[in-house]
Amino acid sequence: MLADAKVVHRAAREATAIVEPGPEQLRIAIADDHVVVRSGLRLLLDAEVDLTVVGEAGDIAGAVRCLERERPDLLLLDLTMPGGSSLAALPHMVARFPAVAIAILTMEEQPAFAREALRRGARAYVLKEAASSELVHAVRVVAHGGTYLTPTLAARISLDDVGGCEGPPSGLTPREADVLRLIVLGHTNGEVADQLFLSVRTVESHRASLQQKLGCRTRAELVRYALERGVLKPVPPPGA
Image (cartoon, rainbow, N blue to C red; front, side):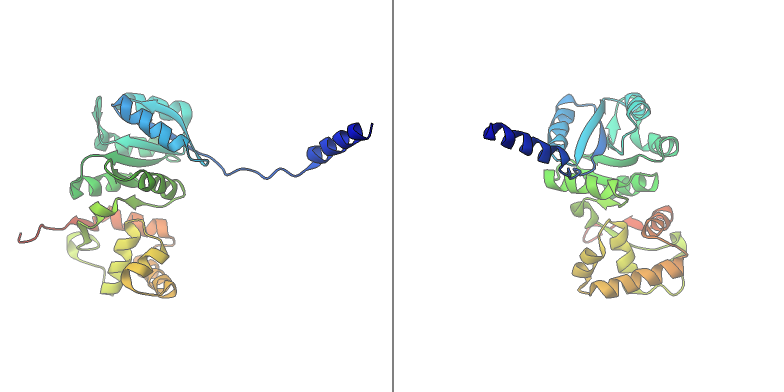
């Protein structure tokens, strides 16, 4: 009898216990024409407690249908697929599904492709040779409103000018240009501080100055401003 009472008491306590909510899951769709690649990506992403793959596609038309059907938070999109150019399709996808962040996952490591993809609305450009941990990190950065570019590729890109061929806006200092370049490449204030040997507070001050000078209210607007004006340009090879 006493044992039964203990069981009942434990069950009642468990029934009234406050259940802590789990992490909000990010819903991801994968568009790649290689089945093996899609399967590997699904295994990788589904293994993360906060990520879940909700759909797959093997061509551009299938990717659009997947977006219509699943409405994911993020689309991992191969740059080269059957049924049309991913670069050409990007603006249409962005306009039709503005709530979906699009991350390019590709073997194409030419800086010009990366810049064009970002200019057309992609929020990330990740090389397929990247480590699994980097891809997962990029997915989280993009899904939470950031922009990401594979560091090995970012090293080949520099802030050559701001505002197109007319040069940087009047009053933009070299240090502010450095901060803007790193912001566009998806680095946090702390990472910018580490790379430029500054304090986080100094980086925040530079960012505030950039936003005032460029008429941008948020970090996202800074990134959009830079990408729309062709901020990122390929670095010429040594000796060129």
